[in-house]
Image (cartoon, rainbow, N blue to C red; front, side):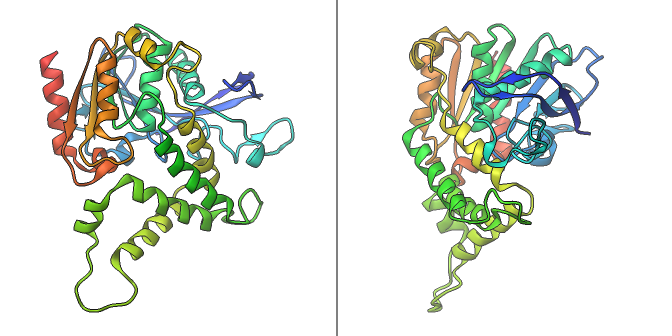
Amino acid sequence: MTEILKIREPFQTESGEVFPQIDIAFDVLGDLSKNKPLVWVCHALTGNSNPIDWWPGIVGHGKYVDIDRYNVVCANVLGSCYGSTGAHSINPTTGKPWLKDFPLVTVRDMVKAHEILRKYLKIKKIDLIIGASLGAFQGLEWSIMQPGLIDRLVFLVAGARTSPWCKAFNEAQRMALEADPTLFTSEPKAGAKGLMAARAIGMVSYRNHQTFGLTQPDPENGQLEDFRACTYQRYQGKKLVNRYDPHAYYYISKAFDSHDVGRGRGGVAKVLAECQTQTLCISTDTDILFPVEEVRAVSEGMPNAEHVMLESIYGHDGFLIENDKLTAILAAWEHSL
């Protein structure tokens, strides 16, 4: 059951902007009073604080992150629309939703909020932190910000610094959102059409040429419109609109862009070389958003890391779909330690 930690004191962001107060939505799966290993799951772009909702193949009874074996914590990131402070939260200074005045947040700000929650929950050690994409960003940042706190890190389909390629995809999605004139207004379903278009752009980056060729082929019947790939894109856009907020998509994508573990620390190479966390970096062979070489480079830069490639036709989204293959990789790594 999702809980809300209400922090009623100023929270300064990395950019220097200040939230007068913040809320942190979180789920605890298990009983923290019992002496079981602690796993912290970090969610990706549109996830929430209950990983069983969005990663049921990996988190749950009898899964790799077995909630009978571990205590599991997951916190909703700042900027989201699933309980933590976001664009639709009330700015106590104005008494109105933040909307276009929402402060710029970064992955480091997200981790700073996680630290507040960790201390509130009186967690002294994290045995394993696992996350993919934006979730992996958080896990790596946390390992750097709090040396010695995290024993093991599973770093899935991500890099140490967001590439120009990723930023270009994200900007295209934000341009789609901005093209919807209702964005940042008080209209019902403000920004919904823009979010549909943005998600369609995003799906192209999460999958690849092979995925669409195998999953959305059209029969050779001479049709001129209503192609499967086209209807699939619209379906994915509508699906996200039904569960997510355009403003959260907008601001969290900005946090995605600014991810850079080397910022203000002497560069990526220096920071990775100093990070002692036992780390497994997992790429997907068909991922066009974070290619294999980018994920491998993270492992090669860390003293206690290794890299494994997951084979999947599903590109970046392979970590959400290839549950058996991913579980086998995780189990083998755990056994080798």
